Length: 267
Image (tube, rainbow, N blue to C red):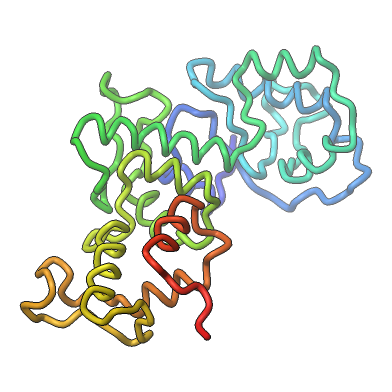
């Protein structure tokens, strides 16, 4: 029988269903020279998982797992072995994988880059959400409905609301490419104040004060001189954060602020 760890049980509830994410856990195999981590063994392991879940759209192997000693879907020499996929991927970088093995893995829709794959799944789901609801403000508790023809099968059960929350919380760590992917879909970084609202607030500050040297503690006051939708916006914090992230902000945003007269370095 497969033995599920608490982490794996949790992951099974968080990750999309139907992508081959069954796993079990025991001590990690470390040996960097361990013959376990060979292209042929990877193919055997992937084939075993694929046989267990033929209907899966993608074959996304668990991060670490132990193959049961009595599981006949796997070759005898692999039964009872604990596999660490991070080790596998590290080892494969130094080995030549034959085109035959690559072709067979691709035929099973093997996931070569799990993190990028899960990002792509979330973007796919977000596109569908925007198509269905006309906006990208996803509720935090939103889960992609299962068995719905309106949604791609591989996204069923995906916790899209948590993905959106995480993207907002880690905006400063996202690449410019990923930020642009989200913004093309109308992604709202701050539910109460979008990027454009922030830019408009800076422009309004400049109109009122003649410059953009906004104090880091400045918060838009509730006054008639300011549009109501900008009230209480922590503009000083936004400006300070922008200066500290000039190298990671998408180029089109940098250009937008520069044309406005934004001072990236205070004198």
